[in-house]
Image (cartoon, rainbow, N blue to C red; front, side, top):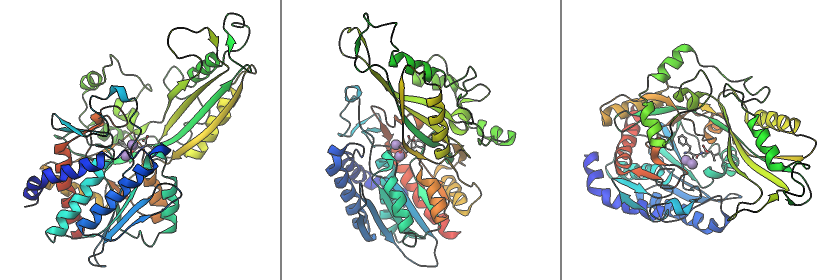
Length: 452
Ligand code: BES
Ligand code: MN
Ligand code: MN
């Protein structure tokens, strides 16, 4: 019945999602402030239409949070659905095969910024809710909290959660903002990495200099920065910041074994990325490297002349944005301090160095023996005819650790995207199949969780 309803309504579901995808709700770009609000209003409207109560835009210092709820029975368990309606900037624009904010279907996939992360995945919950309301299938109370600042660090959501603990009272958090292994092998994410995001600036002489007149006699900030960055990994691929690994929780050999039982095709992985060889910390598999090991990566690096042709110049300064992905039990503040101290200590006297900390977030692992996790397993078994396996994702959703800390709630990360969906990249996409089966699986989750 549910399957049928989804099938006969899929054109409308997609039409609605496309309308949301057309709104360029780029949270990082202040020029899109109005669009971000438009997306919030769209979500609010759709929650109302589906039958939610107390639907409201909750103002914050930044972009608004959309709240809505349906309380059917105080004795029933309550599911708090979290998602985000903001998206990453679409740049670089010229690499898109169709415009990022004009959703286009090719090969059964929706191409648009936010198609998977997270508009497409978040919208599945609103449609699942519509279905449950239409067919009197509500077996849990449900609350929605959809934010517009996930891609910029969720600072104001933290405050909102702390100030609205009773409003957000629930039994579990449900999020679809992660990946599964494939449409043939479902999985549930049981761990996410944390994040420390830094920016560094290396300054040399008081102006750009002629690289012939001064080159070789004055420190070149771009050379110095490159050398400093290169020194931050040892020849084992480990991060060379003193103390960086002190708190890292090592997995037991049983945990490692389970993790590596997940299907993974290294040749397919390399082929899909167009690389000849993989690279990373010695002694760990690719799944371990992305799921369970901390990293340090340059996200952007600039300085000097990058225009057309050649200009002989010794730049006055050079910059880099550097992210560190963290694992239990690393603490983002501590890692930020270790980085800062180390980076300043390795700077030669010939330059000045400035370190700025951007946002961060704690890593999270979720229990795999809770009632909610078991309900998620049941849901996959019922809809996919297969048992999902627990995995660890490399990305971050900092709010998951905060939910645990502030609300005492565990999260179920029931994501339906694929790692290859090009999140944050040009040509982001989301499979229509993933979208539709996701809706069905979410309905099944509510059913099973309501029984528990
Ligand atoms: N949905 C992603 C996180 C994600 C993607 C987790 C794929 C697991 C698999 C989320 O929107 C995101 O991009 N988070 C940021 C962190 C944030 C603080 C900007 C990230 O991981 O870079
Ligand atoms: Mn996301
Ligand atoms: Mn994202």
